Length: 357
Ligand SMILES: [Fe+2]
Ligand SMILES: [Fe+2]
Picture 1 (cartoon, rainbow, N blue to C red):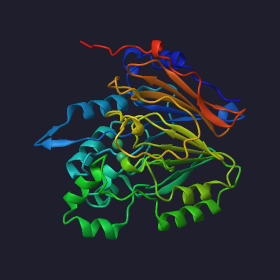
Picture 2 (cartoon, rainbow, N blue to C red; picture 1 turned 45 degrees about the horizontal axis):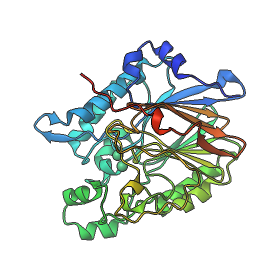
Picture 3 (cartoon, rainbow, N blue to C red; picture 1 turned 180 degrees about the vertical axis):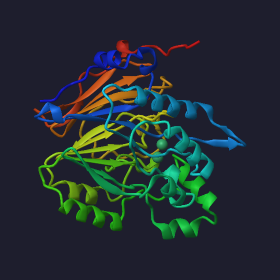
Picture 4 (cartoon, rainbow, N blue to C red; picture 1 turned 30 degrees about the vertical axis):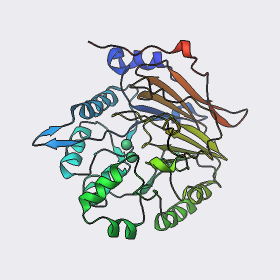
């Protein structure tokens, strides 16, 4: 049975109600038949720390990360570890990665890092690696096999030849609405590593996979997309319960493909609108089999906030607390075997944009 932590419980335990209500972190709980084995981890993503000049950085992006770190340190019960979901930096500059790492160093926990495209395309992840370690790896924790993939690779030949400098490459790949960038992929080398890694894992072991881009095809125009998603999914299919948790999209998303549940996490920096709201662009949503609410473009901070994630027997329940909107729960419905909103947000349930003084 799962042990649900309600928002009220959490806030009582942390004792920081006023602060916690606006912070963009994810609490992940893995629940087991024997509750003494339950554990939690926290997830922070997409801070986009941006260097302006001298010792100046974009203040809002700094504040989002500083507050998330502070909140994770206050959690009670304490998480076993923290995952950072990628895009720590904006243009992969040493100054940005150093500044981000310094803010992250205030965390009191072991932290695992995922590579984002904004961390990568200046030096192809070299400096990031010095700070945070390998680009892809796996680890086991209390009966769960965790996998971290670098899903933002592209065809190196193509990028090298097209753009004359590393800075140009980074700028081209940093754009959201960017037809010059080729689609992200995990790539053959890493898929082979994953195949070998999974050979050692029992098929009943719950898998949790962290990637930066979604390991599903949502919208190519914004690279909400991984080109070899089907091949990666095929490697995960033999396992009984698989959860993929990804950043990059800066919004709430969820989906179910076969045995794999997909969950996007929110950003500490800013929300992206849902791709189909960009009406002039061709969009392609072939695999989103589950209807869902969309971020509302009239709510500047919609789809940013923080969330509980409860992973019961391999299925995730997400509890989202939004900055300027009503809370939502996306729970795994065992009857139809997919995640779904507990209720849709009717127009009259929306809280108008708040003015903060
Ligand atoms: Fe991002
Ligand atoms: Fe990204």
